[in-house]
Each structure stands twice: as C-alpha cells, then as structure tokens.
Amino acid sequence: MAARGLSAKDTVVGIAASGATPYVLGALEFAKRKNAVTIGVTSNPRTPITQMAQISIVTPTGPEVITGSTRMKAGTAQKLVLNLLSTATMIRLGRVYDNWMIGVALTNRKLQARGLRILMEASGAGVAESTRALRQSGHNLGAALIMLKTGASARQAKRLLRDTHGHVHNALNHAKTIASGRHKPHG
Image (cartoon, rainbow, N blue to C red; front, top):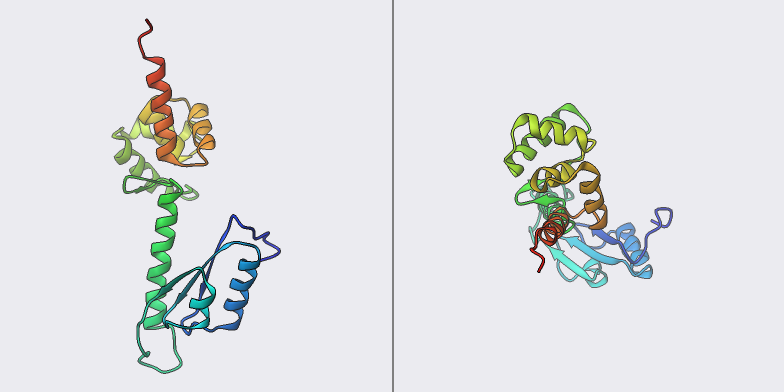
C-alpha cells in the first residue's frame, strides 16, 4: 500500500469473514495512519475489524456448512457487498448515466458492441450517428454521449468531462448551462 502511494484521498476496504485476519487488520491500520477512509467487511460482529474500521459492513451468515471454509455463505455475501460498493462508487463518480454504465473502457469487440448499444439507448441516436460520435471521441463513451445529447464537438465533450472529473451528469448539466447562456435574449 505504501508503494501505491496510499493517501487521505483513498478508501481501503478490508475483507475478513472471521473479522480477525492479521494482514487485513494490518492493512486497515496502515490506512488509518495515512488518514484514508477504512471499511471493514466481515461476517462476524464485534470483532477486531469492526472495531478498527470507520465503516463496518457485517453480513451475519452464521456457521458455514463445512467448518473451516469461508468460500461458501460468507464469501458469497461478501461478493455481494463488493458488487454494491463498486456500483455505488461508479454512480457517485458519475460513470453511470441513468441506468447505463458509461464508464466502460471499450477495449475489445464485445465491449465496443455493448458501448454502441448503450450509446444508442442512452442518446436515442441511430447506429450511424452513434458510431460516428464514438469514432470522433476516440471511443470515449462519456464524451460520445455528451456530443450526441448537446451537439458539442469531441474536443468540447472531453473538456467538459475533464472539468467535471469524468462525471457524466455534471458534464451534461454544465453543457446545458453553457448552451442556455448562449441562447438567452439580450436586452
């Protein structure tokens, strides 16, 4: 974590079904010293991880069917918690527009096809217009959406995203504010 440059701007999620795994507790302790936000995910209340973490998420799944294995109920519950945390994070960062994941890196054909479908549904544009916007934006789904929703150029859309730290909703709102300012009657 030190090599990664952990700082107060970060959040560390410690996961330990038992609530007492030493290296997880060590990571949380290090994060606390760096003033990072700490979250503990465990299946057992009142354990060292719940005492150490600023935020505790406890999934009380009870004893495993096979003693000694935490890959069953506890692991499944913790995976669900991680899915919720990652989804909430993407929403808060503005990488989601309505119910579409706009923060998708279009790195292969499957994701490129998914990105095109998302862009068409989210913008209401057709295949040709969406394909053109994706190409002009350098396959930046957020920028392409802004282009189609506001008429901005690829350069303007990327600037709006940069200025809003990649937050698609904020970039769209900012573009609308700029556009409405241009169209106000003077007088």
